[in-house]
Amino acid sequence: MPALDLTLEQLYEEFEQLPDWGDRCDYLIDLGMELPTLDESERVEANRVHGCQSNVWLVADVADRDGTPVIEFRAESDSMFVNGLIAILLLIFDGRTPEDVLQTDESEVFRRLELNRHLSGQRRNGLAGMVQRVRSIAAQAERNAA
Image 1 (spheres, rainbow, N blue to C red):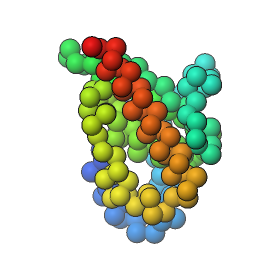
Image 2: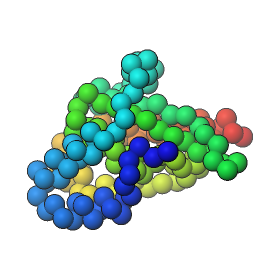
Image 3: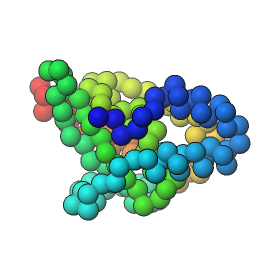
């Protein structure tokens, strides 16, 4: 079940309505606040994403959807803004097959949302670390399915 009741197209439309980066940041914070929180037992070092300025924990389960394995991601940060970035990643990757996750080019989403233009180097590195962790989980799920 998706963590957010929103599609990428709807996110693009929302961003287009908010031309000011400050308003977009506020929107991302609001979006991140809609995410479910992780259980305390999931906020452990094994689930921590390294390379992020803030603490980020990423958890994934492989579920069967009509005979097709899909990855269900859950994540949380101690930063409200980073939770908004997590929401974007979930819109891109959550509920997709391992193969789809590995083949998805998230850079087009980041370009359309102008994230690379407005995020600090630290935030871009953290976002890259989260994407790398998502891909690592997908690669492992693909190997396990083989």
